[in-house]
Length: 336
Ligand code: HEC
Ligand code: HEC
Image 1 (spheres, helix red, strand yellow):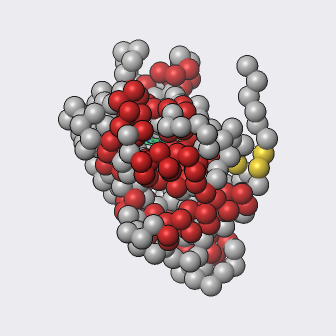
Image 2 (image 1 turned 90 degrees about the vertical axis):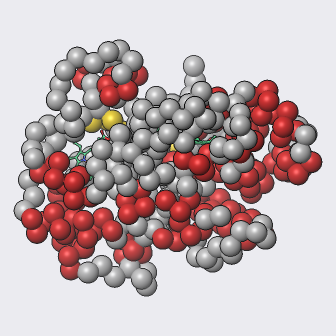
C-alpha cells in the first residue's frame, strides 16, 4: 500500500487558521476572535494529508464538532469531552460523559497541533484523523450513533446540506464528507502563540521571567529527550514507569502501545504528550492519575524507568516554565 507523504510548509496551516478566524468572526453568535493568528513556522514540518483544508471544510468540521446529532441521544457532541475552554480536554481523569455512562479507559487529551501527529491516541492506535473520527461517533460508550442515522439527520437539515455543498460541491451529505470536514477542523487547531512562542519569535509579549528561563534550560537538558522540538513531543512511545511491571491481559488498555504492536518492548509505553496548555488540561497522564504538575514532577523525581533528578528549585522553575507554554489566545479563539 502506498502512503502519500509530501511535506508541506507550516505556512499552509497558519493560513488554515486565518480561514477559521475569519469564518468564526462571521458566525454571529460566536465571540469575535482575536485578530492575531498563530504562526507555526518554528514547528517541525507537518506531514501531508489527503484532504487539504478549505475554509468551507474547516467551517463544516467546526459545526459537526459541536453538533449533538452525531450521538444516538442527540445530546453528546465531540465538545462534551473536548471542551474548547479546557484546550479541548474535559477536566476529569477518565470521562463518564459518554452515552452509556461507563467510565472510559483513558484520559481525554487536549486537541491541538494534531496536524503533526502521525499516530493518534495514547497508544498510537489510529493512523489518521479522517478514519479516526468515526470511532467516537460509533463507540457504544462515547456517542453510540450509527453512521446511517447520523447522515439521515444531517441530510434532513437544509443548513447542513448547504454547508456540505460549500465544503464538498456536488457530493451531498456523506460519511466521507463528515470524516474529511472533522479532520480539517481538527488540523486547524494550531496552538503556537504562548508566551514561549512569542519569545522564540522575538515578539512583544514574549518576555520570560528568570525562573521561566531557568525552567526552560532544565526542560531542554532533562526532558527534551522525549518532550522534543517546539511541539514538546518526540511523537514516540515510552514507558515512564507509572506502573510496576506485571502481566496484563491482552486487551488491557494499560498495556499501552503493546496492545497495538504486540511487542514486549512496547509494554506500558504511551505517546509522549505535548507540554503545551497544561494549565487547561489537568489531570495528567493517559489515565489522568495526577491532578497537578507538582504530582507529575514528584513522579519523575522518584526515579525508576524514566526518572529525572531535580532539586526543589529546579522543579519550581520547570513548573514556572510550563505555565509559559499556555496559549490563552488559542483557547479564546476556539471558544464558543
Ligand atoms: C465520551 C467522551 C468523548 C467524546 C464524546 C469524544 N471523545 Fe475524543 N477522546 C476521548 C478520549 C477518552 C480519548 C483518548 C482515547 C485514547 O487515547 O485511548 C479521545 C481522543 C481523541 C483524539 C486523539 C487525540 C490524540 O492526541 O491522539 C481525537 C483527535 C479526538 N478524540 C477527537 C474527537 C472527535 C472529533 C469527537 C467527536 C466525533 C470526539 N473525539 C468525541 C473522549 C471523547
Ligand atoms: C523517557 C521519555 C520522557 C522523559 C525523559 C520525560 N517525559 Fe514527560 N512524558 C513522557 C510520556 C511517555 C508521558 C505520557 C505517559 C503516560 O501517560 O503514560 C509523559 C507525560 C508527561 C506529562 C503529562 C502531560 C499530559 O498531558 O498528561 C508532563 C507534564 C510531563 N510528562 C512533563 C515532563 C517533564 C517536566 C520532564 C522532565 C523533567 C519529562 N516529562 C521527562 C515521556 C517523558
